[in-house]
Amino acid sequence: MPVLLSPPAAAALLPVAGVRLGVAEAAIRKQNRKDLTLIELAPGARVAGVFTQNRFCAAPVQVCKAHLPAGEVRALVINTGVANAGTGEPGLAAARASCEAVGALLGVSARQVLPFSTGVILEPLPVERLVAGLPAAREALRADGWFDACHGIMTTDTVPKAASRQVTIGGKTVTLTGMSKGAGMIKPNMATMLGFLATDADVAQPLLDALVKEVADLSFNSITVDGDTSTNDSFILIATGQAGNPTLSDPASADYATFRAAVLDLSIWLAQAIVRDGEGATKFITLQVEGGASRDECRKVGYAIGHSPLVKTAFFASDPNLGRILAAIGYAGIDDLDVSRLRVWLASAGEEVLVAEQGGRAASYREDAGARVMQEAEITVRVDLARGSATATLWSCDFSYDYVKINADYRS
Image (cartoon, rainbow, N blue to C red; front, side, top):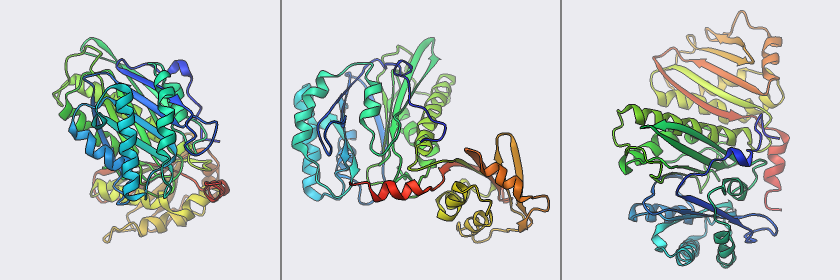
């Protein structure tokens, strides 16, 4: 079960003017499951995206990166079950064929279509099944299709992940709705995780391009389930411009600050939902690293802790074997780190426990206090490097027996 994460209610997912979504069963990998999602965008919508840095990036990612700068995007097509990664030139041909089929169906150019795939790597995409399922997805297109769509993009996810926000900009109500998927092979490095966020705000393209990178860095690029960067990671930000607000073009304006805060808030929620639903996860762990000489070194320390199988299994067992955290900090790659100045705390449910200081166990630390904190479902690890003023926050989860079982049985 996910960590303090419930499925969204259909009524809570607000339509975004200029966006329609439809879902179909195409038997991409398994029968009788929703595995094909079509998203249609109204003319004039602006789109920005960031993608995996994995050198084995999937065929649909390569096609997306080619199509995105080419002009107005009018549709997205997403399949689950097969990732179409590690598939060479036939995989690229399949991704392009899916765009051509969507384009023909909607009366737009194939280059105005962005393809996305998620699922098993190194298996060919059955593009003929995808194409055969498209008419049903088109028939299902509707503005309130977010609930079905967030189900249709799932793989090993145990719950769908979607939410909405509304803010007032220039006297107009602006709506934002987003969805994400992912539970394993999660350590995005953008710029198996997919994220789509749409708004009816009018946003200038240069601002949208900058915002998607900034927001991804503070949300989807700040999570880890298992430290594996997928071949298919993508985060797409869509602005249809139909809210009627004055065009957002000045990054220093108060209206843009309001909009940016809403996009970031929703993106962090969607990113954290992936961690809360991490494969086999029982604990949601916030990693706060402060006092760094740079944000980059704070992130190195956070990820060293969040990736460590020894740390993650200790959290699963609620075992305060906290020397594992110190070991992870020590190998994070800060060559001149003065461990005698470093401090580490554990916190949960209003209680914070100082664990380490002056190069070792804190004099005030008692193991029963550490065990008490580790039994909670939400835990914060706070580290003060005592080197400067930089900070970083990341989110991770524990490793349970189920993580091994899910991944051992993934293809069966």
